[in-house]
Image (cartoon, each protein chain N blue to C red):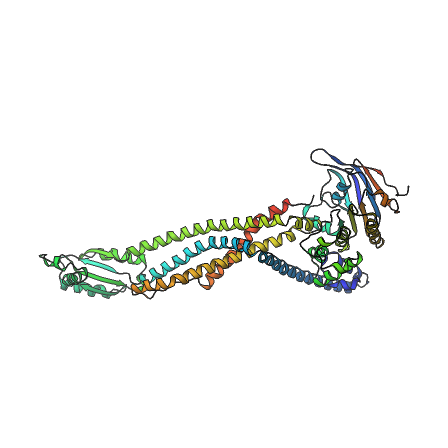
Amino acid sequence: MSKSKQKGSGASKLPKRRLGQLQTPAKPSRRELSGAKTHRTRFSDQWQSYRSHHRQVAGESLRRLLKRPLATLMTTLVIAIAMVLPAGLYVGLNNVEAVSQGWDGAARLSVFLKFSVSDQDAQKLRQQLANRKDIASAEYISPSEALEEFRRRSGFGDVLDQLDSNPLPGVLVLSPTAENSSPEKIEALRDQLNALPQADLVKLDMEWLQRLNRITDISRRLTLALAAMLAAGVLLIVGNTIKLAIENRRDEILVVKLVGGTNAFVRRPFLYMGFWYGLFGGLLAWLLLASSLLWLSGPVKELAGLYNSSFSLLGLGVLDSLIMWASAAGLGLLGALLVVGRELRAIEPK
Amino acid sequence: MIQFEQVCKRYPGGHQALNNLSFHMPHGDMRFLTGHSGAGKSTLLKLIMVMERANSGQVLIDGRNVSKLPARHIPELRRKVGVVFQNHQLLFDRSVFDNVALPLVIAGYGHRDIGRRVRAALDKVGLLDKERQNPITLSGGEQQRVGIARAVVNKPKLLLADEPTGNLDPQLSAEIMHLFEQFNQVGVTVLIATHDLSLIARMPYKLLSLRQGQLVSAGGSHE
């Protein structure tokens, strides 16, 4: 093999030899020029061969997994199931939030008036309140209207007929403007209204919504805790699988180390293996979740229809999906990283 | 090329494998390392490959003290040293070509370079027509030659062989030895551990004879 033909190699010792040849010309300027050129070629060659090596190793790891489809599917499925649980909860919570968000705007305050307040005074108060900037609309329901409505809705008409007087107070129903609908502002408004001499009791129709919000907050934290635990599970699953794979390829690792393979070289196929396991697990989890959502979306729509709502189930968005896949692949890689170093150090040629 | 200075190697458990061993093997030399089993031949080779480390003394390879070589520099050293093993250490999950190509892949050679060099090495050992076969289908002698091709494919300056003819009949052994001579003739330093005295008696190379971890003679085989 002639030396001039060895240009393409990334070997460490060859360029040195070529550099030696180039150093013989006397002119220093030319030597510098050729030296720099040589160095550049060498670096880009090495980079190219490094990249092609990575491509090769990634492909080979993939082929190894596909060669044993059943075993690979089992591991992938375990990873997918571990990921589907927190991801499913996350999607569920997003939906709950989307639903409750729609109700936020509908926050209302009911001001129950004292019995001593006459219809006229109540109308005056309504006018006053409707003029306030933080109130979008105010409606007055007089005791007789309230009784009428109650009679119609409750079906206790006969019972009501037996009462001597109307037990219901007049009510002012207020809708705050959108920008004043946050829980804090509404509560402040409630306190102001409570201070009105005409008001007997101010009821926030939103309290149950706030409770729901707190519950979703708690659920969100629980989901995170669950996700953390299941992520640890994924790490262990991948780690254990990789450990077995390393054990299976022990002979190969020994030979590679004997002929000068660095730890990074030996490690690489296993890291890619972890990466693929994670990515496949993530993709499968996504598929499971997407099909579950599809399966649920019909009944959910029907249920929403019963509530006169046009709500439809939110799926995983593009960004969420990408995050899911990336974190799955990352978990796989990390799981591999955690075992590979320790396992490979233990395998030394003797 | 290889220099041992007062090297001692004791294994955990107390076995003294090498005892105050000193010798120097110059560049381009070819020598046989002989001695009974347990005399320290394998230990000597392992110290050169840094598969083991000396308890005291210095091992210099190509002017570099490897007895204190940091672990991260070991691969670099092993790439410069070709090794032929008695049990071949071939991988049966891949072709002859891929076995021979392994050191080049590790060293990061490009595709075309690898193809050219592997074929040159296989041609040298006369196995060019078997590159697509699995080494398990080859005979013992052929497997050993694949091992030799793998040891020299990276053009090492130093070639070590541990009982390379251990399982071969005399004629095949002579062929293998002839191959080593050819590599030596192009400047490769060759050190062959063997206990096959009848084989080396006919060859004009110096001997390193070990007995109980010490050098008994460093003379020529014809003395």
